[in-house]
Image (cartoon, rainbow, N blue to C red; front, side, top):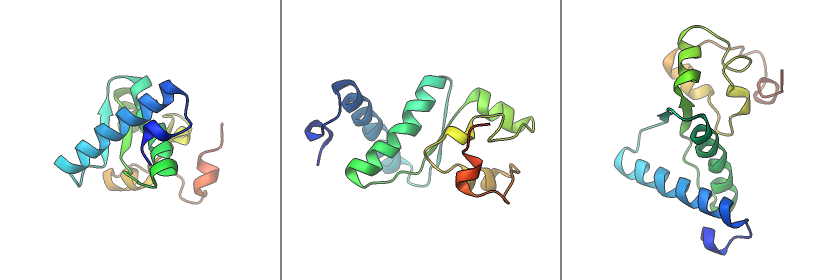
Length: 118
């Protein structure tokens, strides 16, 4: 089922379709890529959130973490990924990326607990 056939409002359809095209192109060019760094907080939100839409509608997962420069800077300065850097609002699980780059977080909490509002 394509995005044009979905029952989404037109602007969400466009956003999901654009995100899908970007991520499919990335997957083809760099299949092992699991991070996109943006300079735009809005793009960060849409590129992450629409991966949930893509998974729901097309049953395809990209699992690419999307961070903006401010989030990455906070992580590098030692701020809490979930409480301080907004990782609690991510659709794509960010824990594999944090583990890969050596960023500590409270592993005693469940996935759902880490995503509760603070």
